Length: 330
Image (cartoon, rainbow, N blue to C red; front, top):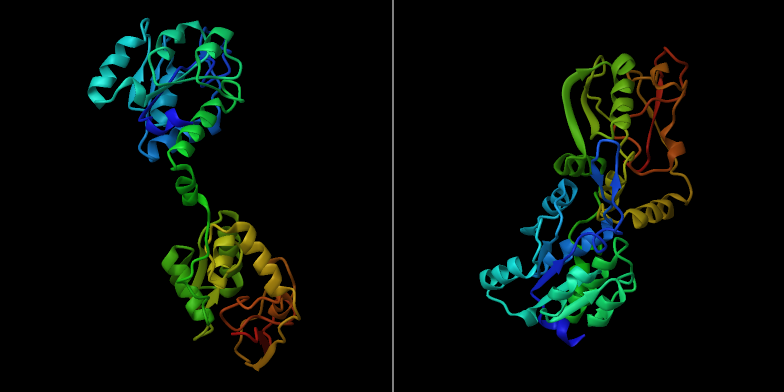
């Protein structure tokens, strides 16, 4: 639409435009209104691309005021009987003309504004008189995406919509390579805040399992325990792949690519299991019943990043293993 190309200010009515027109009044006389999240995104899109947004409404409402603050709408006018008065002030303050303004309305009180602005827009369920005065009638009803539709109409006409959408289209990070070793993986996780170093000595039998479980429950950074009590030289990285973010880091992918991360992980791990390397270490720690499992072998997980240290193996609970299993990819 040609007239949409010059728009620098979009003015919105509230009831019947930003809402569906219904007002719920509770037993205490308090009013409640429903707002559409897609409409809110449309407002944000306009503001982020250099188009100002204003609200002019004849009523006063705490809910509307809160919504305007939430959307960071600077030009908010409530309790207005004659909508053209604040409109004239905004024209002077912004140094713009009628032709650079769009107005979205739904009822007779909006006609005075719609006859002034360059791009009058009516919502789908507006009264007929308002539709007749409009240059564009949305397919969406008021409170159900009409504002979003108007925003897209304007931004597409101005050639800004595609550029705006690119902000939200995830792309692979070409500059980040997958870690080549467990050490690099841990460092990358620590650097991104997805892992935390625990420098204090940790009791393998009574503390390690509880720490890992708690980290998983809270979706907290994965714990990298640098010192294991009674096992000098051993360290342990717990739950390294319990989040999509750490999975992404392990494969050199952007963490926002959630569907792709899952598909890529399945693709990489659906092959033959990695054969374990048996290491003769009499001083290796044994996995105890604190994990709610009597035994544990990292070979079964097929994952390159299953552990950073020599893992516990097939020993009975409460005993120490004479052999331990470590992932062959480490």
